[in-house]
Length: 515
Image 1 (cartoon, rainbow, N blue to C red):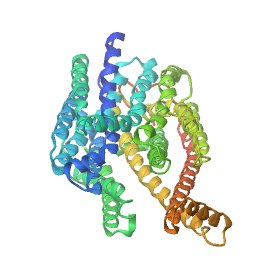
Image 2 (cartoon, rainbow, N blue to C red):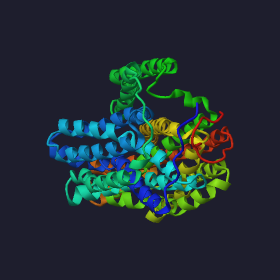
Image 3 (tube, one colour):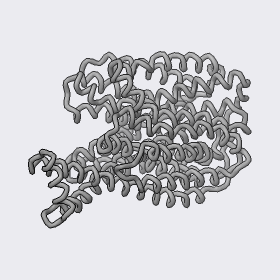
Image 4 (cartoon, rainbow, N blue to C red):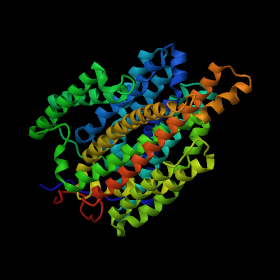
């Protein structure tokens, strides 16, 4: 059956305004995934809860968001893409306001659950609405504009969050969403309301929805709490893992046989979608794991403040912002697989550069790999999103974008948990090996303790100083191990890109393309 009539692209002026509106909403959404992280100590102190309890501020948003993202396709068919997007942005603003007003942890977590749930459709729909607004030959530029916001926001989050918490108060990390969100919602509605997509009354797949909530919720809580509870040494983590595994198996079996599934899993029958999502999600998972480990190492063991750790890692966005429009322009006449290959090779190079870091490294040498990584970021999202969505009719793009973003976000959570766990376990191994060298038979150790005691320190204090030095060295060596492994993984992932097929243009206006 023929698909819906394709909408003509927007006029250049309206298109630029729509790009700003959609990008602002995306920026606000992605920013909120990281902005609260550095503010947790302030939140815990103000609300009178323990640091471990305050982490539910992050977990609650992540769980609700992960459940909502894959529902985008079903919701957009039911309510219309423009209406759903604008409603999501307005509700996100209201949820942000409630987060700022929260006077207890319970109220804050409830507001964060609402915020995460309504944030789900925003990123996939911003992709779909941008692609519809641009001419076919400029779809690469549309993806470039979209990717720039998703590149800068995670880097800006910790810097902005730290500054607001230190100079104002933690509620302001949520209040800043109010003017941005309301402006984005108003502009989007004014520009796009005449471009609403057809809706249809779809039956609610209640069983699929319940299974999705169960397995995604269990998986997200497991990933967030795994390191804190020592992973599978904890009965709670084992139970969550079992629920996630069984729930996922039942979910897949049900959705593949349901006439109106809540998530369209048949998308994975398309090689470009399958391998494009694998490359995008796995690459993002490794990248995000490094994004988490790097500032932790700088702050905990290299003496950097939160602000300085943010500033030396921020240059990742410089070349990404400069190169993204260029990548968007050359996309129509270049095989995107080649551009994506450049991204993974540069990611690998940067990882191997970091694997040579030592405890006396100068800030400039920390910044250099960050600047180079901007090249990889510009070449990462744009071609892989184009490959993933290639050949799909425009009406399936929200569903495809929702599923691919869900897998990417989940892999990001996996990457953060696994990389930090690997870092700490490798640090324990290195600490054991280094501590074994601190004994009376090692002349360097006795010389060090003698020097410290000569400065007025007693034996216990001298050993405490040495212990701190051993710990710093152990975690630095462990960080090198993480970076080295990341480099190897990026090189392995290059092969995944070339399992996709060459593409020609963006998603089709209507009708289904061949697999």
